[in-house]
Length: 75
Image (cartoon, rainbow, N blue to C red; front, side):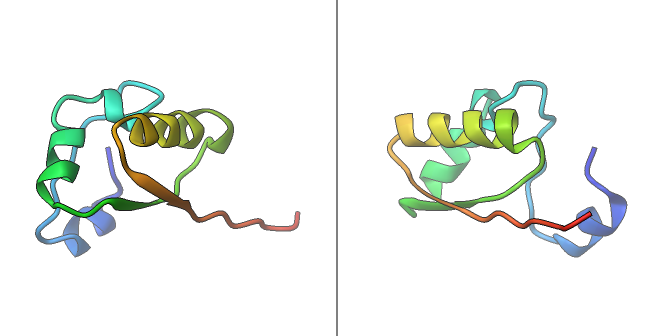
């Protein structure tokens, strides 16, 4: 589940349980994005090599334009 501080700050957000590598495989996610009538999605997250990549592929297949945000922390 999302961190409680995020849930508290995202007052009008809809939260989904994520059980697939791509969030587009979760029931209702793509429908919710389409209902917003915005063709672009800003994508960020963890597990970039799997989850973010698979989500980007799923969003592209659903017809969305993707902008991915990446950060890097030097160890």
